[in-house]
Length: 223
Figure 1 (cartoon, rainbow, N blue to C red):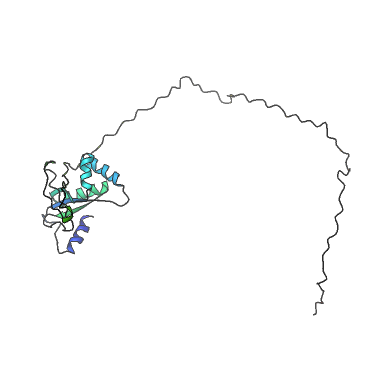
Figure 2: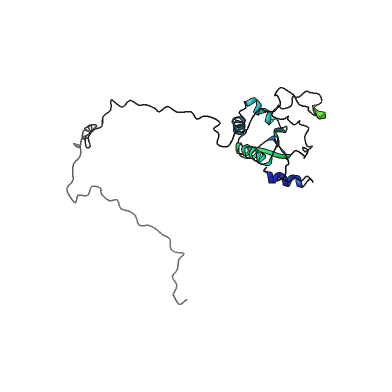
């Protein structure tokens, strides 16, 4: 969802804000990924983007809403949204004056600058009352500037082949002598050649075909 889509969504619920004002925004993520992009690919992209390990990235895909960044201006919010979208993650931009939709009992992660070991308050539903669940911990990450190389390329060693034992023949030189194939020998001693005009096989008489035409008749053309 981009910024305009977010505005349209919240206007329908009576919440309006002006993107050109001094409104501050939160960047939140619920685990939704772009259509057609494998989840493992998105997780790997986010790990490189935020310079975080796999365990931290996995906490972003628990189904609960995670706040990636709080209190940023419009331009910064757009930059976060674009970077996450390029990584295959569908994030939301929410004005800080707009409360989170009350559609889930999942906790909201604390600000990214908070210590990873410090738990945040969690609201549990009646189905979760009998068990203790740890809220997703905020990731300690930063967004790199455009053009920054996240992973240094690996220099491949040029393969070396020993060719000093090879030489190039002159044009027209026969590299391999052709093998001599012996002419086939056939025993024709039992065969003879007849004189021209001699009938080799007597023809057999073929009886004429017998076709019953008694049911046929011939009429005049004027009839």
